[in-house]
Length: 479
Length: 65
Ligand SMILES: Cc1cc2nc3c(=O)[nH]c(=O)nc-3n(C[C@H](O)[C@H](O)[C@H](O)COP(=O)(O)OP(=O)(O)OC[C@H]3O[C@@H](n4cnc5c(N)ncnc54)[C@H](O)[C@@H]3O)c2cc1C
Image 1 (cartoon, rainbow over the protein chains, first blue to last red):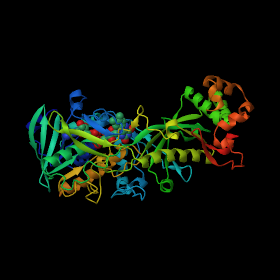
Image 2: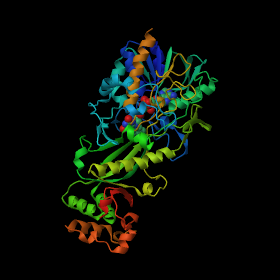
Image 3: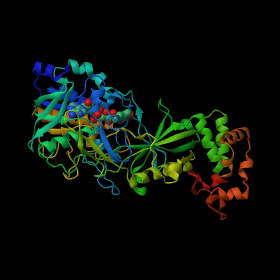
Image 4: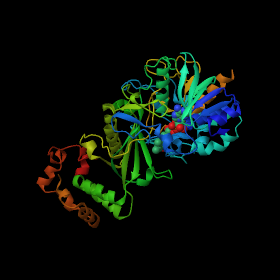
């Protein structure tokens, strides 16, 4: 059932056991799992079926530190959430992403990749993915990895019919959960805002917060403040260890056989480091993406190369004259070191229309990350030489150790951390089952639970974790 | 700055494409060779497989020949 207003929902007299906040990939997946298990579940969605400026306005906020996107641009607040404009790149986090790294504090998850692997067949159905091929090592240092360009499922559109017909799932649109109330053991209810006014309180046996990788922290910080610590009793890490995938054009490559690494329809190839290389260089994970350089760009690369390595330039010029592709732009996205100082706070001055403080995000890239970018590109360049595959040129700002450019992509719109998973209650917010430490009936879904970000886009892992949480809750709630 | 940057890039690329044998580019005048970076000016015999970074390029020393 889908209700366009909270009033319409009330009239239906539906009795849910579980209340999910948010209908993005995480919330929708968990709801479908619970619905399939015969558990009555309500999904409260702040937005409506379509985009609206009024709804987006609730997402405005500020950033302190490095340049970042406007917070109302980098996500969408309506049914289906940010899946309404995601690009559809898919890959599960690597096995090594779950392991602690001696050279990077606060890394390591309380679960392993094998804990989510059983859910991958479901994830493939949901995201309409073909099977992933295994990584191919091209040297001891570099893996040729696969990111699948999926059809970019819009969760709101794809599942609207199924949700509407479901007897166990009620999706309630235009219903903003402004805060949760709790007594330090249980969430006792949610306060709602609908049609521009207070819409009373909502109760259910279980609450699952799936409001997105920025908003999960905001809602819990505000709820905790209002209930004097009654919602997240161990709140030291709440809002902290927030992460993105910084993304910049890192350079160019001249390739001996461009076609060798193109297997996907999108004609793009991706490379990442091996764990051994990360350990040796003490760097984080990264992904180098090869995108064919347009003709004019190739000429520039050749001209530049001719200044330094004329023989090579000659060879490339020859290939270009034969209409052969020979050059690529290298985009690098990398894993951020988890830092408590990268965090979401509540604004002290600015509130939204419902009176909830807006986000003040503190975000800065670290030295370790800069090293990851530089060493990563050099590693890739060295590998191409050793394997006789080509040559790499670093962008001037990287070779000359200048600041990050501010006129580029900057990051992936991937909002991770803030309610991270862990066993240490001073460094994490949820346990291995995504349950808030110390609370009996409060869970979190989405990438805010990520302990580390790896290099892969997050939604495949978000969906796998949501399937796992859905299964877990089905058992817990059925008892 | 290297010698070739004085030419327009367009001219250079056209020259590169037109000329099948670019011996011209291989024999830099000594002064320009010295300006092309420390690795080029180094007179000591060096491992041709050594990885060097010149003008942002990650290269094998032998690439600089
Ligand atoms: C431009 C862009 C491109 C992207 N490309 C990729 C990509 O290629 N690959 C990839 O893996 N990821 C990509 N992403 C990220 C991807 O969109 C997110 O990872 C994913 O949507 C997160 O799902 P979620 O369910 O956790 O949160 P969201 O999708 O943010 O959904 C949260 C939902 O909660 C609702 N909500 C918020 N607050 C409340 C509240 N208080 N009460 C009730 N409801 C609330 C919102 O309206 C929204 O519907 C991209 C994102 C952007 C912006």
